[in-house]
Structures are given as C-alpha cells and as structure tokens.
Length: 221
Image 1 (tube, rainbow, N blue to C red):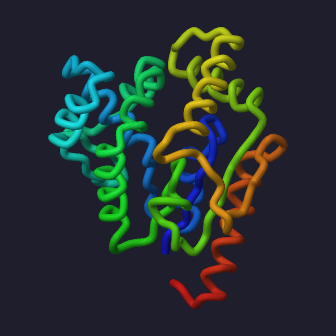
Image 2: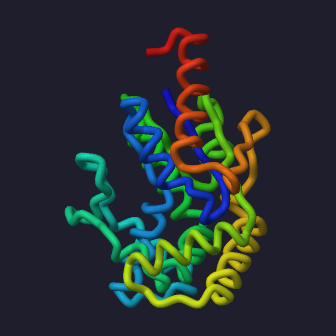
C-alpha cells in the first residue's frame, strides 16, 4: 500500500510522513532527500550546476539506497549535511533537470515495489504514484511555513532572520509552482489538509484514521 503526501516546502511533510509511517508500521520514503543528496554530491564534486549535461553525468553515477530507513549515497549514510541552506538554494538545478527527475522517479518506484510505504514530496500523487490508494496534500500559510523553517534551522545551529527565511520560502514556492517538470500540484483525488491550526499529533491521528479506514474498505493489510 502506498500513501502519498505532497505539499509545499515547510508544510511538515517529512516529519508527518515519518510519524505516520511509524504509526501504521509502514516504511517512509523522503523523496526530497533524494534530490538533496544529488545536489550535495554535485556541490562536493564542484560541478557547474547550471550545466545540465554535467549535472546529469554527475547524478546518474550516484548509487542511492535505503537501508534501515536511512538514505545512503554511494554507501555513506546521509544526515544534516543535505539540509543546509546551501543545498536548499541549489536544489532547483537538480529538481528542474528532466533526466535526473526521470532517474529518481524510476528509483522511487523501485524502492516501494514490495512493501508498504508513506512517500512524501512534491509530485508523489500526481506523477510518481498516480494510482496510490491514499493521497494527501498538506499545506499551511507561507508565514507559518517560514516560521517552522526558521525554528528548524535554529535548532541546527544556523542563525536566521525571519524576513530572509520568508523571502526564501516565497522564492521556493514560485519555483515549485512554475517548473516545467515535477510542478507542485494537488492531485485531483488527494485530500487537502490545512495544518496551520493543527498539532503534529492531531495531523498524524487524522491521516492514520483515513488510511486505516481506506485499507479496510479495500481489504488491504
């Protein structure tokens, strides 16, 4: 069974996907981390990110795996090094590259081939898993999402200015909504969840009940 969670940056997708998967006994697929991993790798290799062909050559040589719930790049487990502002600022080069996106979509489908997964990202319910049984689209006001991002960054020891975080958030929204491939869209059959006034616990409980009800209706275990 595949559950998809899409939505804009800062809507809480990653955290909610992890908690929901734990509640359901599913695995979790953080597709954004895959794009971040290739961005980080290209930065480390000092590739010209505006050179689409060089970026493809660099990206397609990578080996991405999920082991024990953690993403590995070329055999190395990845952590906070892919969550830096530098990676966030450059990830659009990877996300907008058609060949890399096709490669990652192929991998995402492979990863979930034989188990139950909660998969989160921007295009999971529309492009990657259009036939998923349960689809959610999480959102929140841009101000709340910027505040959440600011708290996250400061918890990682990264000094921030709210106005700058908000400006970055608005720019990321613009890119996600305007890109030619993998554009942020709500699937027609996705349930919209507005998280502004909901705690994580409430969101996870709400989503888990929907998934369990849906699985019972379809007799999926």
